[in-house]
Image (cartoon, rainbow, N blue to C red):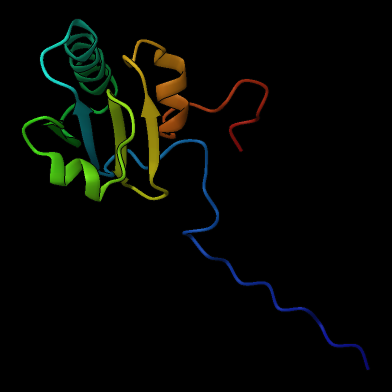
Length: 118
């Protein structure tokens, strides 16, 4: 008699290309002072969030010079760095956040090119 493998559905492991429309996003943007690159990163991520996550996100901007312990705790090695804390999985983006397609794919708001949105 053969044993049948049991198949378990785990919502945390099975992810679709897009998050549910009511899921809240918790984001932290780590910047290094008021440099032009930091200011551009803030503008870019706020614009992306307002266009694609309006009313469903919390964005906290952390200056690593003013709050170094927060940056150390998150193991931030470059700035600007965006950390998506929720929904899981945790993701990090480094740079001025100007590549909107990359950010949207990383936030699971748009499928990666060449992948079906299953």
